[in-house]
Image (cartoon, rainbow, N blue to C red):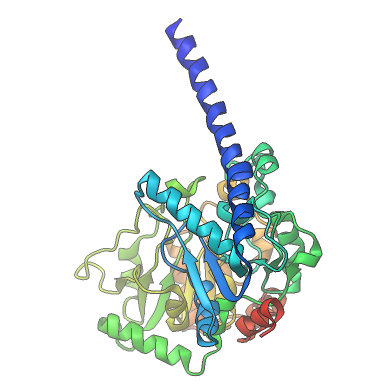
Length: 399
């Protein structure tokens, strides 16, 4: 009897939480925003950046923010706040919606509940920059009913992307995928490029980044740099993890004289890749704290799996290996927009021995098929030419 009662009460509490969320996101917040609109007008020099996932502005925000600041715009960033008292959160929400009511534009890099359910007033644009280039792993509406994604009921009640004015993408090739993922019409998806890719077109950036890496890890010396940057595993972001499957000792024995291995775990992962002590495998270095764009520019070869960093790295036209040891399981739980084996611009490797052979072939023996990477770049990154930031600001703000 008690077990049945607890089960029923748990179900009631779930429904209460759901309807409380509906009231908050679809009634209370829009009402607060409309109230703010009554007492304010749009400031043409005010731009808002919002991301509820991280505390600091990310790499797609920074080029936009820096450019606008230099032009005299006021840029306001709203990010994640840890362990915030309830009363302070209420006050912050009040301030946010008064800022939102005055903003000329709002930039996002993923879904954001702060504005997702609040239709902006006329004169305010919401711009979705997204945090990845191209279209690789499925996301958004494309993942409905998958173990990774939400169910259709959630998107019905909380259509978080519906008020997006523009969503910028890296090439016309991926417009259909973003239309599906964000549930937007073609007129909203614009191949204006990705702001953070402008970094890769700076003069002498590869040499500069290699010098930075050698300053951080002088033991690399004159060896070639191999970057291992896998994405996380797990069906939920809060449970993101790494599977530690490479044999670094074997790799050191066979590649250590000619190569150095930098390890860069996914920033959302809760478990890090174990880095052996330098005395054990002196060619392994923990680069987890270094910016991924600088690591990519310094790397002579990248080993990854299902990470969208392959699109940025393709701009450099360098070799990649795809360590897809769990492809079948990953495909069934997350799925891809393109058939994985036909899509990736590099050799597939399945274990440590394959990785060693792939590094030797592509980096040390001249077996790298550069044309394959160039074709991939032209297909998926054609709008990324070093001027993405300027193009987006011109089309959104007319500057």
